[in-house]
Image 1 (cartoon, rainbow, N blue to C red):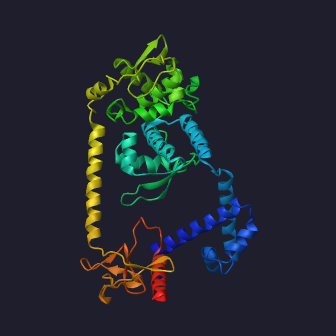
Image 2 (cartoon, rainbow, N blue to C red; image 1 turned 120 degrees about the vertical axis):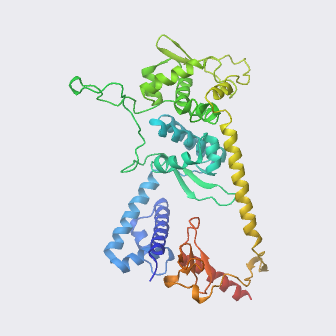
Image 3 (spheres, one colour; image 1 turned 180 degrees about the vertical axis):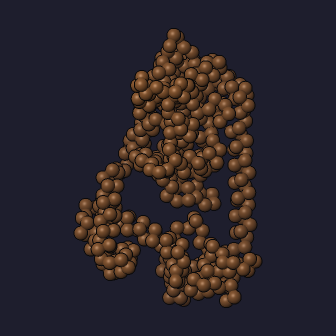
Length: 444
């Protein structure tokens, strides 16, 4: 008997391998018949999952599974672009930036998701492509939000909508591996990204035909570069000016002289929030209005390397004098510094724990044979007494007497730790250990 968790992990791993093979065949110009012949070949290791389905549920079920995998792979390949150079990667990032700037981000959670996504876009531009590395603490500092808010946005907005994919969980000093998507995945049955898209000042009257369309437009128009430079400042923290002010400033920087109605469409901020935020910005001298049109103050964005479209190019921007005062008035001055200090302390504590664990490990011994290194097996202290063995390969915790969820007993009677960061199944871990032992014995 194999534990249900191990069976599910093995099935998911087998499906990922099958999907990768299908994508490779589709990209190489193959057909579904060639994929079927490849997966059902008895000597092809990558078809083990498909052959297991055929053995357990029949040939028809296996062929239907291959057909579904092929359709999904063909759709994925048709919507992706092969990046052959750094120039192609930057073109993809530029198109993604345009899509982010024209996507409506409704509600406070949507605007927070925009800040987090813009932080990942900054990391991707530095890395030179959609594939990049970033830790949670690093992203939280870049976006100017807490780690708790960051995780909520990941799970409810960005990952379900296809904007971000985590390919590998970070460990130690290495951040997680992320890939930027295009946000084309619709959400079904999950938390809605929209928080409140209709005005609630007066109840609608169906007889008068009121509110037949959403208040905000279906497309936005902002300058995300301005947003990316401002979002880490204390003035735009949660209890400060907030994300609504960020989006409105970005919209006004791209298109000056907009009315409130136009700002509602370009910023995707509700009318009531737009009026309230513009008043707060005007009290700080950051925006001004002439009649019904609003625009940024001439020197509102100085100190961040941002110039207004009609600014004098010969004028040298001096450090901003008012942003810190804005943060002090709202009680958010020092939020970013305290967040960085907390993250630095957490990193130091984590590294200290890693160092303590490393002290209990002996240095690996290798020999060189035919130009390659072979690990020398050493006496391992993880062999457990038979009294700790539980059914189905589980391990009894000697302190509680209950099975431990993260441990399994290998075929040689030694412990194997399975953590969420390790994507391999128990069978693969045991096979890898047996292969390493066999290689050493052959060399010896």
